[in-house]
Image (spheres, rainbow, N blue to C red):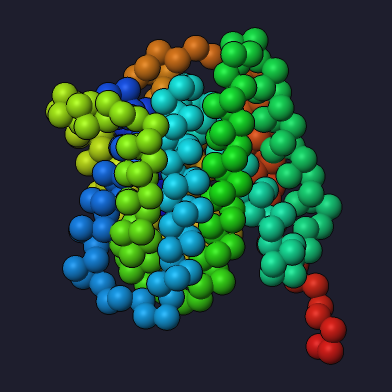
Length: 283
């Protein structure tokens, strides 16, 4: 199951890249979340007492993570995006020190440093000189992913499909509004989209949003986290190799070095369990 999740997520970056070449990114993301809501909400209960917090999560996770990420992906190659978005892991560790009383430790701090150094190396690549804005947008999207993770953890125990379905219901109209404002030709693009674009979108909705996340949260609940999480590192590797094969994206020495450094840093963070500080008044 963990391997299948990594493969699905790795391929998903490629399918999104293919879809945004025909359907504008905000409209694509709106359709994705609307589809997820339609498929999941009929089979889940309304999370009473949590609707307000789910609406806020839909802003950070739906619009500010996925919307911004898809927008950046419409301007930049899939390979670098798959690597840079891994900054969500060190960002999550940083936020956990504040919100959940976690202590980083020198090994996890070293991993965070490596991850940021690796991204900096990728920014130095000459082919990235004119792509600083979309690169920074990917960094922002990674940070919003970390923020959303904190908010989801604070939400407490909630069914995965319930979370995804109702969050998607709130996210879809936000992204549709963004599309109407910034993508005036989006409806025409949807009408003109090829069957390949719709196939790519279907993969994102069904395989990534529903199947992969369903598998992933089941694994996190039933298996040791440190045995599960490292499998996710296969996803960007698959994305990078796939982007080379499918889109003929160019490799460079700085991209390769930077990507390896990021992967090493994220691996260190994932393999180190956070140590919680002792709170006052407790043994």
